[in-house]
Image (cartoon, rainbow, N blue to C red; front, side, top):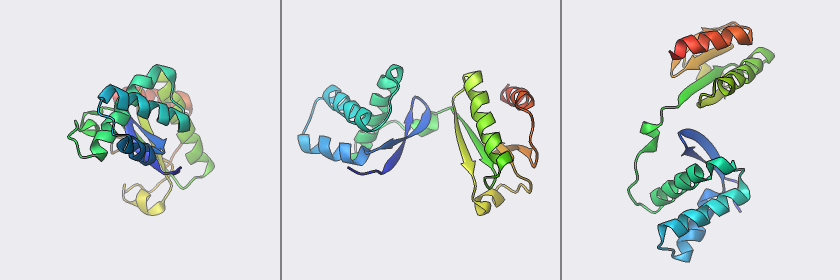
Length: 165
């Protein structure tokens, strides 16, 4: 079994799943023709290697079926363009302040019940591409909204809420 991680949009959020290529090969070899049967089989395989929140099983099943169809060359809707999820990037080499900002951001989005892809960019060359000098920095949908300083979680939450309006 492969430990390869494939990034897939599940319910509008990009999630890493382990073992998809192996599962796809297995389904291809079984010659299933019924889409519902393929979808259920793939979901069960995904659940055997990945945590799937029970309330999100249908989202996972649809996402994995979409990826399977892409893998065999069938046309599928481009979900990446439709995903209206925020992209949040914390820029910083991994110091205490950068790690704390990342944790605070994740907690704030969970409190606000807003789906967001949160990435922590630690590579200095990648950070330099944003043109920011100070770290930690916070980028929301390609716009730098905080640079070179830290804020208490309550102020971060207010800033983010204002930014999202």
